[in-house]
Amino acid sequence: MPLMLPAQGLLESVDDASGVELPPRFAEALEQVRAVIARCDRTGIPNDTLLAALMTELMPRLVHAYGPGGVASVLNQLALELSSAGSAQTNRQ
Image (cartoon, rainbow, N blue to C red):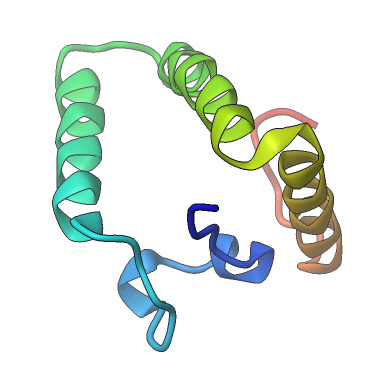
């Protein structure tokens, strides 16, 4: 089974995730994703549209790699982390 970062690690910048074993070529993949996000920003693609597109690509890949139960478990852990992280304001509430 592929490596999945712990949910608490998802709230930290990857640049600060020391001690976490990352998958092969992770830095290269992250650089590519960040470049695409920057290109979308430069071309004026709205953030909500970008996020919807990323989720459209991400969710089926996660389910394929970790199974529905594995993804549900990590999303549940992430939800718990987010709710205990305080009441940070977002654009949508």
